Length: 597
Image (cartoon, rainbow, N blue to C red):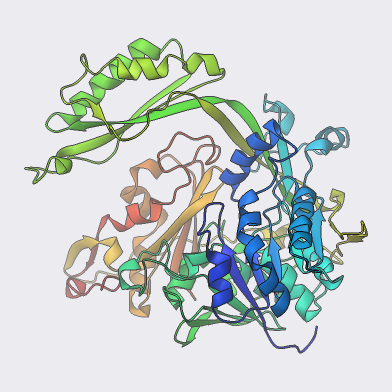
């Protein structure tokens, strides 16, 4: 470990589709040493897998990154700013070659490397022969029982392949499927000279990486307190300053909108986790040790974080086509909304029930009583059908459009939206594990030199990675008179997806409200608030330092965001849904919202 100053790592992408101008904005903002861009959410990989299957020569990586990068290569070279991204997708070598061409066209001398070893689809038979069943993390079923043919299988690699590339002089490092946090861990390990056994420092970097990986999520985006965020129309991208011991400060470019507070950082900390043990290929992070301190405007410090060895296994994302789907949005107007939706469902089942495999008709929302406008009386209806074969869905458009003169009164769609005519592929997700020792994790330089990523001296025991079991809190003492108010008046929330599971973290800003939150949000308390969760297995955890209660809702998202039929496919709105529920609070709290301005 060195005593170098903290490395400053700025994010410029949180997903495929994030703001195109982000690199330009980052270069116009505060100084950074490294720019990192994350493009590969699980649903993105699912979508990318189909284009890669159709066009392996050009469909494997994210071309958007090339267009973002090209105009700024001279400035990056002049300032010596490194760039690390997982935009390589299924073809990091191809992306690296494309970047090298951009560099050559610009007449520059930047070194480009890529990280290899995550793509395992060609090794699945080898794994089966060696007795690795790639059991599903949720069902424990072996991959061979899936019944469909995988088209992609990618391991979540750690950050040391990136670190090796940077140590060898790379200016731009392209990866495929590394963990999102690895895009930060790799540069930090390179900068500070960490070894794979410095688990506390690595855990701190994983924590910082988890916070900045989703871009404006850490500066006010998707934040339940969004009404208090300055410049919310265009929140800026975050920066992590990571010290040699792994402690960090989360900040942002001063010129940009948004804010960095303990609450905006907490929001990202509880996002897409499975509990206090945050498992990464470089370290197991003990999230219950994370403490946040506001140390200045838009500056939140994260003290040293406790880490332990990484798991003995690596997570693998496997994708396979399971058929096709097609959907449309219709609208009905009150009165008699329920009866109108029932009629629509019955008519479509009569027309399509024997043709398609699944048909789902879901009304969204309710009409206002005595509506002030037509739109206040209008309820959207999402209709979706799935089938194993494309031809089974050919009848869907005509079946829907044929109901205009024989359906419920007021039947209409958005006349300005193009109607769905062609089905599109449906991709399912299979989360699995393989022994980490079978992976070949390496950096590949422009001249073909291969550098193996170093590995830790040991991996974690089962006890070190097991999620702790937190007892349900005792019933709250009688606080006297209460009043029912929105949960969101006193609690923030952030929800996300982990395969077929949804997670949601809820927390309070005021320490005086912590005991109320933890005794209100018991497992039974959540089931009472959320009927959709009553039959699900729930896992509940507490984070006292963050004043947060966290739940994993197993199976709420089916088998994953790419294949379930929910309108909110990846559970983004689960937290806000809960915040809209009425809960009892002490009478004296009523009218004193702790979250709303």
